[in-house]
Amino acid sequence: MSPWQQELKALLQLTAPILVTQLAQAGYGFIDTVMAGQVSALDLAAVAIGSSVWLPLFLLISGIVMATTSLVAAAHGAGRYHDIPHITHQALWLGGFIGLLAMLLMQKISVIFPLLDVPAHLQAPTELYLQGVSYGMPSVAIFCVLRFYSEALGHTQPIMVISLLGILLNIPANYVFIYGLWGLPKMGGAGCGWATALVMTTMMLVLFIYVLRAQAFAKVRLLASDIRPHVGLIWRITQLGFPIGAAIFFEVSLFSCIAVLVSPFGELVVAAHQISLSVTSLLFMIPLSLAISMTIRTGIAYGRHDLAGIALTRRTGLITTTSIACVSALCIILFSHTITPLYSSHPQVQQLAAQLLLFAAAYQIFDALQVGAAGCLRGIQDTRSPMIMTLIAYWLVALPLGYSLGMFPLWQQRALEAYGFWFGLVVGLAVACVLLNWRLHTSLKRLAQRWSADTHR
Image 1 (spheres, one colour):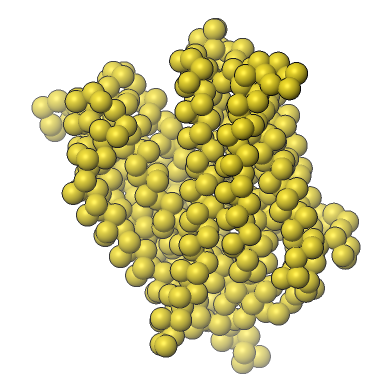
Image 2: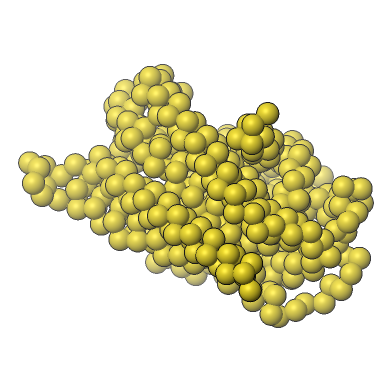
């Protein structure tokens, strides 16, 4: 088996469970939406508004503690197994702290509802929903740290199994809180938030017990060494992780912002935009999962000072993710008119969504290459530059261009409306692709020079 084939096998073995985990986490929101919608439209709206508040916050927290992956993977690659529990303990302190901050913030977030023009009759159920979710934020932050610790060591299957068990628990938990069984008050759709907190806490406890007992973690057992907080390392993790969280937040908030900006064009346009976004978000899980695997493999090679290994992971990962993107783009082109009726029975919504999906087909390769490059950069602990480049690509290129084309008749006879915004996304992702891959190329050149200089000293 050639080195390329060996690397591909290693990447795919990591990616498959991570992909299932990512899809399972996306499934929680789908289940909440379906079960709240069965109660009433008001309950569904409360869950939708609440989700738009806490999901970006969750992604920001997850991104910050994602620094655990690159640091643990580097220590693993260098054979510094005694450092791994120490790194993870400090990440747990950080995760617990920002989880508590998020909990307190969400419990007071209702004060901005009037500023966001949330209808008065929706404010109370949305606040109840967010209050429930808030109690799970410390647990989800700690779960993410333990997840990244386990995945960086190559143990991805336990996270997959626990995530799937979480989905199975989420359905009856929602039912209990929605309809008020076992003496609990009937909360309606807002009960989904309390069920989410219960599921998050249960998953965290199960994973914690697993990593404390499983033989696979014997060399790097948590809580068996110094667990006191060390401000220096916590600050290093924060410096490395915050740009990751910010970059993810920039991308997620861009799509959320576009959903708001297209709303003046009518509910049919908003529905079509949401359908297209739902389809592309699902497809994006594949290159995203591969990028997480590339972070792990790159981080291990980085810890070994193995430049050839980093280059092999980069080349294999980017070729693989580009190939997958080509298949995704082809499927979108061929089946867009088959997919959209699954979401809506309205002919105009179906037609517009299918047309917007063609823009999604156009950016599949750009999206795959940019997320793959970002994964490698995280592996070599370069996170600040990608954050800046992501900000430029999304908020200084994609949004202004999309807004100009969508809202104003510039050189065209009429404003392009939703098409203009999606064209802006294509251009923005292309810019991100070029910038991040250029950054990866220059970072690896500098790394080679630095390691070469260290060798000759």
